[in-house]
Amino acid sequence: LELRLRLVRRELLGSAIEALGAFSEMGVRCGVLKQPLTIEYVGEAGQDAGGLRRQFFDLFTAELPASRLWTHTDAGGLRPVDRAALTAEAAAQLRPHMEACGRVCGMALYQELHRRLGVRWEPEVFAGQPPSLLGDSFARYFLRAVRHDPPATLAELQAELRAECPDSAPDYRAGPEILTRSLRESGLEGQTFVRHVGGAEVPLVEGGAVRAVCDESKAEWLERMLRAELVDGVAAAAAHFRKGLVDAISPGHIDAADALTCRWTTPHFFLLTADELQAQWSGAAVSRSFVASCRATATVHPEVAQQAQWLWEVLDELDDAERARWFRFLTGSSRGPRGGANLRIGPRAGGDGAFPFAHACVSSLDLPSYSSRELLRERLGAAVKAAHDKFTDL
Image 1 (cartoon, rainbow, N blue to C red):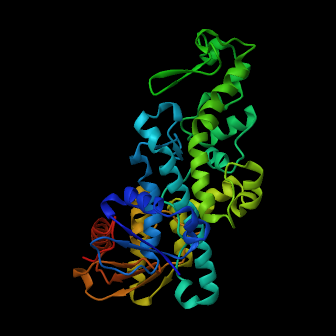
Image 2 (tube, rainbow, N blue to C red):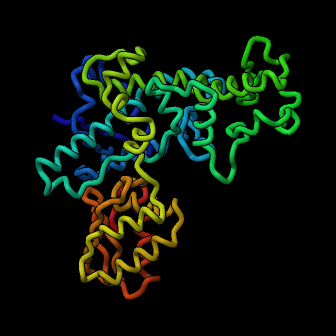
Image 3 (cartoon, rainbow, N blue to C red):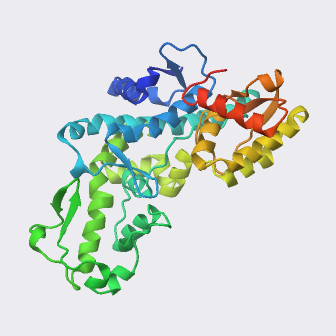
């Protein structure tokens, strides 16, 4: 048995959500979402041996911010748009959209299970396949809400805020100084118990617009503010996302709204922390250190040893976004498994007139014997650009 999704590439997000929303509750309970996944694109020829599937999971989450229901934290984590900022049209789309997103993410976990079982049963086919990873990483506090484990105390709320702030631009509300300094030093003079969302004032308590923050109420204001942003603002989206996720990964019919039952009967909730679930789904960014780990374990054919050396040097000079595009060209995913990936680099005929060719299903790169580093860089860039959102040969 297999689950086959036929999608429209230019409307990948919408066509995937429509396809996943078409399954009946009975079909879902019978495990249709747990089957090995095969991806097809309308109007494109090609057989999915793993590369198209990985590319689907990568592109699906990478395109979520374009839906107007998702946004990024300052550190780049993916989180739902605050419920208070949604338009009426977007709010009407929230449930089907988030349930479909949860189903896709649950399917990604099950595809990894199929891959690992495949390595055991057919190592010659599956051993070279990297895991199916999402193309974006969810904010940890959103994952905690999905797991029925939202941050509960002020200390936890501040820790989650710090986790989603870059070191170069810390949020003053995440540090201890805000509670020890005066209102003037903290910039809280004149602050009331409201928060500003999408140009509107949302009260944190009844009558919050006329209740001023003072030294005695500062801690209360801070906790209410962070809870509204990091918990309440994503709660509805997290509930719908959880329903879709449980549809895909639970061992039977589970009430996703029941915190106790859901947490202790859904393996990925009680076996993994939010950090571990984040790593399982999204792996690691393709940084210089990640490429260095890939280089240490790569299998390189002697005929292209010099060209492989130039390849590593070129990749070291790229920025993270360019390296992510290269890695998608090679594997189908713009993020990599933590600890690196097992890549293979072999020769390709054609010399200076040929372009690199990637076998994304097995993370293998055919590299012509270029005469210079500069030519390799130019040819690699052209190949990656041509195949950025699809698999194609030049």
